[in-house]
Length: 447
Image (cartoon, rainbow, N blue to C red; front, side, top):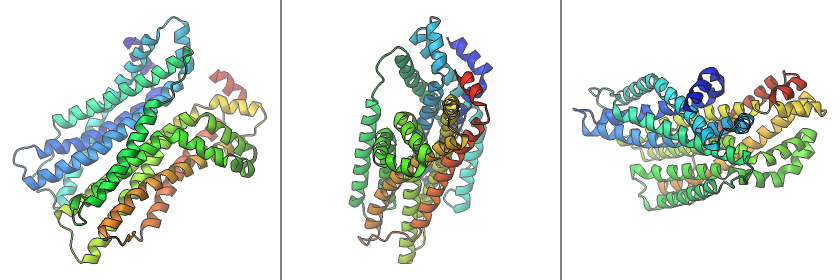
C-alpha cells in the first residue's frame, strides 16, 4: 500500500497541494525559530544574547508547533473527506480498513517529508533575518552568527511528520468507520480537549493577578490564557455554531430569503466540517487582538512613567510582534486553504441545487450568508478570548485603573476586517469559479 501511496502522490499532485502547503509553512516556522536554539548553543555566544535567542525560540516556536498541528489536521481531514467515494471503491474491490489506513498515512508521510525538505531553504533565510533583526535592535551581539543545526532540522522533521501521520490516521479512521456503517464518533476527544483548554486558559488568566506589575513576564500569563481560550473555543466550535444557528436561523431566513434558509440548513448539517474553518478564524482573531492590545497597554504604561525601554522590554515587544505576525500569516493562509478546499468540494451540491431550480445568484447568496455567519462566529469568540487576556493584564499593569488602550477599537476593526475579507472573498471567489461548470456536468463529474 505504501507503493500505491507513492504513485497516488506522483500522478495526482494537485490533490495534495493544500496538505503540502500546510506542511511547508509549518516546517518553515518550526525550523526557523528552533534554529535560534542552535544559534544560542554555539560557542562564544554571550549570556544575554543566548537568553534572547532561547526565549524567542521557545515561546514563538511553541506557538508555531500548536498551529502546525491544528493546520495540518484540519487540511488532512478535508482531504480525506473529499475522497469518500474513492475509499468506498477500494473497500468494494477488497481493500481492508488497515490497508486503506496505510495508504493514506503513507501519502501524508510523503507529503510531510517533501514539505519539510522544501522548507529548509526558507527556514535558513528566515533564521538569518531574525538574528539580523536582533542585531539591529541591540538585543543580540553583532558577533553572533546564525546557526542552522540539528535542533532546527530534527524539530522540523519530527513535528511535521508526527502531525501529518497522526492527523491522517485519525481522519481515515473516521472515514473507514463511516463507510463500514459504524456510528460516527461523537468527538469526545475534541470536547475533552476543548474543555481542558478553557480550564487551562482561565487558570493562566487568574495567575496574572499573582504577578507583580513591574515584572517583564507579566504579559506571558494573559497572552497564554488567551491562546488557550481561543483553542478551547475552536475545539468546541461545532457545538457553539449549532447553538448560534438555533437562535439566528430565523433571522437568516427573514433577511436572506431562500439563500438564508439554505445557509442555515447547510451549516447545521455541516457544523462538524466547518470546525476546520472556524479553528484558524478564532485563533487568528483572539491571539492578534490580545497580543497587540496588551503591547499597546505596555507602551502606554511605559510612556506614562517616563521610562525608556530596556533590553528586556525590547525582547518582549519583539516576541509579541513576531508571534502575532507568524500567527496572523499562518492562520490566514490556513483559513484560505481550508475554505478553498471545503468550497471546491461542494461542486456536486451546487450542481444539484441549480438543477432543483436555484439560480447562480441564490447559490452565491447562500455561500455568502454562510461566510457571514462563520465570520461573525469566529470574530465573536475570538474577541471574547482576546478581551479575557487584555482585561487582567490592564488591571495589573495600571494598578486597577483598567486603562484599556486607545488603539483597541482600531486593532479590533483591523483584525475583524482581515478575517471577513479572507473568509468572504475566498468562499465567494471559489463558488463563482465552481458555478462556471454546467450543472449537469457538475453532478455527473462528482457522482
